[in-house]
Image 1 (cartoon, rainbow over the protein chains, first blue to last red):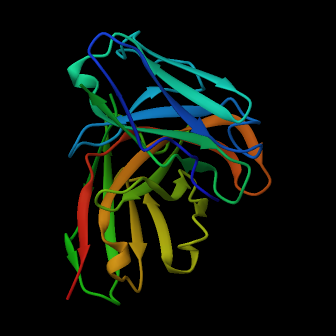
Image 2: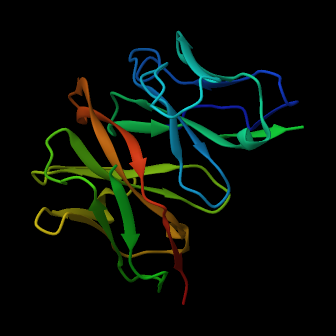
Length: 111
Length: 129
């Protein structure tokens, strides 16, 4: 099972909006609404920010939103803040030989 | 709120066995709504799903590690463990244990779906002589 494809890096200025893409296949993102997004600050464990494509866990800012179109899921961060600078990973259920696959990861830089 | 904590040796010699334990607090590992998994991350690289176990002991492993991997569960101690045999430098990574929430989807290849939600803080394992 190959990793889902994400851009290596995305950047934006404070207050702007950025979008991170996560491209999979019809065996994962394209066929199932089970996509999660994780935020990982340096030296910390990943934290779930979005689950089931567009749902936010309690305590996660409304500035984070998720969507999906075809084989590509997206995470949008609006009103970019300094603390949003981190690595972001998508993940999806997959019908292949493992039940879960992660994306390649995207480094978000706040300019 | 559930918390997970990894423990085990930080240094393992090549060809030996890597053994880690995850202790779960704030919830019962016997809950039928969750799976319990291991995920690793080499320094500066992405996340790799290693495998998971159910409260009843049913396991699914990443095929790339299948022949070297074993995950077990001790419901009395509220712990689950990982053993990876014949390690090499390529197994050097931060190892995370995680809780996976059961999903309403099924695959003939890997059974009931599950998604990681709560993670431990991670433990760094270095394979070196």
